[in-house]
Length: 533
Image (cartoon, rainbow, N blue to C red; front, side, top):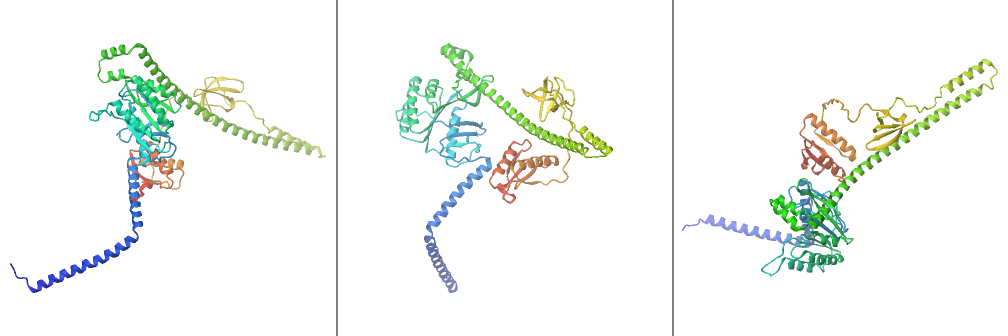
């Protein structure tokens, strides 16, 4: 034990009193603040929700900026058009373009060719758009509808505990869907678990019923009979996973409007099954069925060939449009020159006539003679246009007509036929110029690079149109590479976002740009890009 001095006891008593007073003051302030908060409780709840919403949106924006993702706002169209879309769960996903504007999409084709991932990808895109989450996609071209509910039948529902088989489990799932509307449904390997002939007829009726309830369905299957039965419906579209027969592996690409081949035998060989076993399996499969599979394969190859020819035809059409536009410009130019020439000739002719008329009223013979001589001089100055060409041209010569280059294949009196990019054109000889360079000729060229004397590490594009801004940006990057800069800053601003989008797409495609990111907040933030060269 010890004896507490009176002075210490007194000080301890004072400390306790001060603490009590402090607690009373805190209590009074707490009551006042609580009263104020209570009066503004609804406003505080609103502010709290608003900040939560802001946090959610800012997190989405920062995620999109970090990974270069884009947002697609779900609309009421009930369509699914995806361009340059990559599955969000895959590390190096291959981009796909899908137009799914009908009610049912049936995906057939090669095993391990990406059918299931395409199904999951479409569902993922619709789900991300519904909840305004960013994804790797071309948002400018894409369109995603808003669905009330999402459902998917992917796994084998077989369960010993509940005494349920694969097919029974799927039927149970379908029975729950029959009363629902506006559902985006995905069904993987729809024929799983029962006789495929019976399944084809049953699923045809089930899917027809679901279509009546305004549902949208994506199906993967190897069942050609089911695909053919459903394809009779105008609301059903087909898509096939492709197989590279030369390399014996899937392409992970898709062809619209056809039924795909499974390539089961080829896949078995690829994964180590002996050729003898596969050959015996083909015999058991039957020659007729093998011929049918071969016809399906030929149909796909024919469709691909047709598409390739269509693309070449479209390129030729674009070339024709370009030539027609050039010819139209040249025609307008020639008409203007002709009108100018006619006007000049009329003026000179009128002036000569006036000089000749003056001689009628003149009495002096010498004056008459002078006036007639002047009129004759004016007459001689009038030169009519000639159709003769400036230089001798022959068949086989390479010529140039405005921006069009070609080879002369035939020559008539005043015209020549020239061949240019697979197209034949008839052009007046006087408009052709001989070209020194032939398509097979190699031209030696020298490039002189002038090092910019003073180049800033920043470029400001504020207020410029997209085409003008990209032209300046291209020159700026070229100059920066010549000078030796490995990092520059480009200011494009925020505004409507059009210029920022154009700059981003340009930098993505530029071969000399290693990477680019938004600038730090103190250097422009979202309104600027730090570009590494």
